[in-house]
Image 1 (tube, one colour):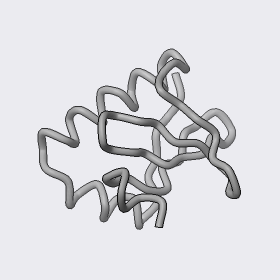
Image 2 (cartoon, helix red, strand yellow):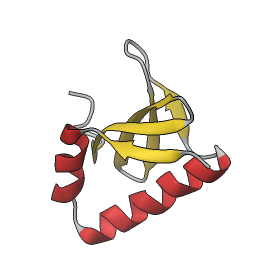
Image 3 (tube, one colour):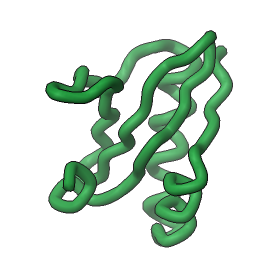
Image 4 (cartoon, one colour):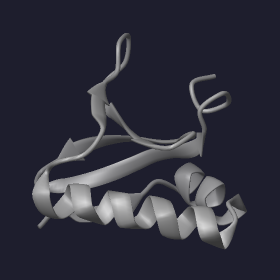
Length: 80
């Protein structure tokens, strides 16, 4: 099982989300950390990947057996 960590920017974005959305995203993120399966796609033009949870996206990269979350947000805002 991989450890999940957040950058300071991602932590601020995470805390702005509603509790229901955070729970939903947390379940998918933990499932990906345990199994390596999920709706994942490598990003074009930048390092990392994205995890899709409905209309929400988690931008992350994997480093030394851990997952580092760089951004969390709605699909229309996260790629800006």
